[in-house]
Image 1 (tube, rainbow, N blue to C red):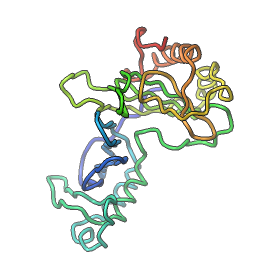
Image 2 (image 1 turned 90 degrees about the horizontal axis):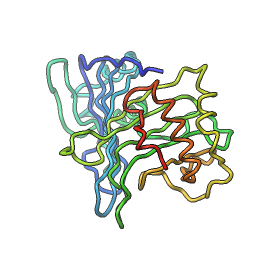
Image 3 (image 1 turned 90 degrees about the vertical axis):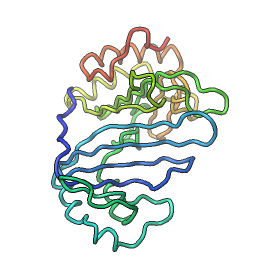
Length: 267
């Protein structure tokens, strides 16, 4: 169940994202290296008071994909491309193996290609056909959001899919760091174990009995789940307690970011 070894940051790279991040909106930034290493930052901005929510992490893409992108990325090509639309992603910078060779905001088409080829850190649409009541489960530890705020102070955000894919996001233990900046570790349970493990985890969650009110779980600690409709809904406390206890047992075989302390199990 270990996460894969990620390639190092070597050789040329391209940095794509947004020139500005006006709220509300979701913004992705990717620095893709020719080795296939992709350093990602995803920012969920909100209107009003309270902190935004940022996920940071590293994933790998096929080196051939990264090299193909970088072969088309040179300052002349990028700056001669049609200008990006206002508020659209763009190429923010290019670098050689020794340093920055260009910075700006240009070539929206190339930026969209990079964002399409690099997987998201935050939970996206269901990655497999969903034919059962529950296809993804999410466990969140956070303080309750104050009135008029979108998020509380989030400590941990764990998602696992029926496919066996999982992501575990945790806040830095450094209290001086900006709140709600979470570091993400992604991985996949062995295919032979994925189905049985997920069914055991979600056994106490009755999808048909859950209220149809959307709740992604980020406003307060708890367990949420989603099925064919793709809408997160909160799991009642007794079922959430059972689910988090089962997750705590599963997580002993996963990276440290996925583990729950006994006091963190939903009561």
